[in-house]
View 1 (cartoon, rainbow, N blue to C red):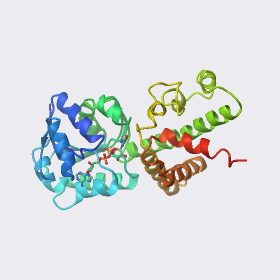
View 2 (view 1 turned 120 degrees about the vertical axis):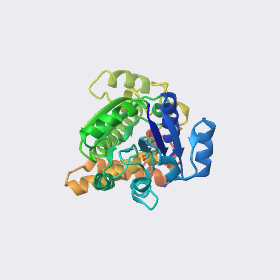
View 3 (view 1 turned 60 degrees about the vertical axis):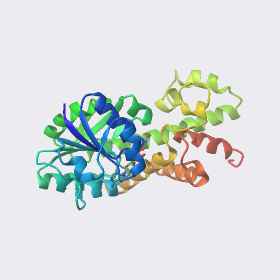
View 4 (view 1 turned 90 degrees about the vertical axis):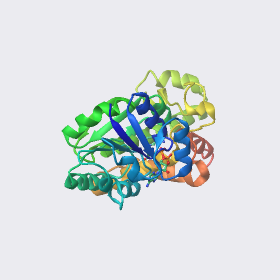
Length: 300
Ligand code: NAD
């Protein structure tokens, strides 16, 4: 089992680090916020008071941070990971960040002689707690082969999708599809209700017909048909609408850079930005159903 430094002990990082400890890895954690360090200490984790101390003896460093600027600061900044770790340390960034930042940090790692992969996750806090995340991994194959057994302690599926940044590319394409399909599912339920259909009856049909998709059958945005979905608990996240907006923005930035037409991705971003501006950012992303239903009277 490996000595692993885990940096970023927030909603996702804390249960991920805890699962690695349960898988018999030797974990030393760090978070910039004292309250997050204390919470992780209560899980029984060994927590360092600064980044350099957390990573000094590590064979692998895992980061789970909010955005690209945090990832660049933690790896490339003064006293950061690349200045503080032993030669040969494997670096695994599990954050969801922009592809350019992921590639830039990977290039710095390669110049400094460190193996690195980007390994963003699919699955929210529940999957992080249950060690059932899906990892999509970008980076050199030997680095992937070293990372895979570690990632197995936090997830069920690990897929090597390509070179540095490819994990982030897969993640934002998937989440753009998810944002679009969730809005489509909400519109279909709203129209069904307006046309006098019982939501359960519409679900019974669509879940067995060509409209079937994950947003419908696993994460249904109306209360009732899928008991485990956030719609049945007041749309508590789950996966927050603000997080979905972040990922849709990353997708639009990437689409502009790549010259890819994503008109529905752009519309999904605009709708989630509107929902966020109306105060919905902290709710589960399926709560956009409430906005669509509420604006129905105005739509002609
Ligand atoms: P979070 O805000 O709860 O946790 C991030 C943690 O990083 C915080 O505790 C913060 O204090 C810490 N941090 C920030 N800068 C730091 C620094 N310089 N050094 C050390 N620690 C620092 O966020 P989260 O929900 O855990 O998400 C983390 C990442 O996972 C994000 O990139 C997010 O997009 C992605 N993600 C989240 C979910 C989800 O459902 N929450 C699902 C999939 C992917």
